[in-house]
Image 1: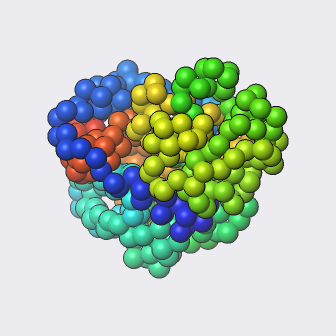
Image 2 (image 1 turned 90 degrees about the vertical axis):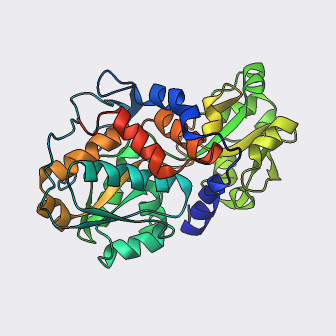
Length: 354
């Protein structure tokens, strides 16, 4: 996924609808974050190695439980008196949330952290990191491998983490824990349509007709020609007869609602998927790659800030399940809430100040 494409497509999330206030979504957000500092929900993903080491990621589909003692929040204010840290984030709504989440959690632990928001796409923010203009930024790991390092997409989540970490080490950086959620291209269909045809995975679209005949996929124009898009879907899942409907960014759900498409390219953290109206299809062959998030940090920063710095980042990452991100995306993108306020509410609900 190229930086230009991914940045442009994810920026579609910044178009906000409605004006519901922050408080209106409190119940949903508290449900997503478990309502406090213990006994939270779990999510299945691969668990990443901590920063600063070369340990390989455990096999995929390892259960990561947020808000347990597995990734505890350091006590007190271990960051008081430590050097300033410059955190950057990219140029779309979900990244604004991530930047605020990590920054505010570190500040709550006494670290002198300054946020430099809205830097740009993957290549641009990595240039800022490589040139020491920032010390840390949250990034989608598949973007590091394919857009920044210009390497082929790995075939598993663990391989993606390892390849990203190896590249970042060439820039005197390292990766902290990756999140339970990933924000990756996802094929969705109306739930009634999925039930009618027994659709659970992308390959099941062949049940509708030979080679996907009778199925039109709506998506941005670039999706039609990408290997991590329609081209890969057709080849890997043997669906040569899929149709395609160019859909202006953000309008793919409308195409499904109107019946002009039976499937659509979406993102796995779209807040629309919180409802039962749409069914995301699994991608067991990994056509769309792996886009878990991890903080990218300078090794010198990890050393200067001490172990509690990374522990704080890992605590935040462990909380970020798909449900939690979708709930926060709904507040910011659907309701027009301030990302800083949404991040503060989430962190406070999970006991960042305890």
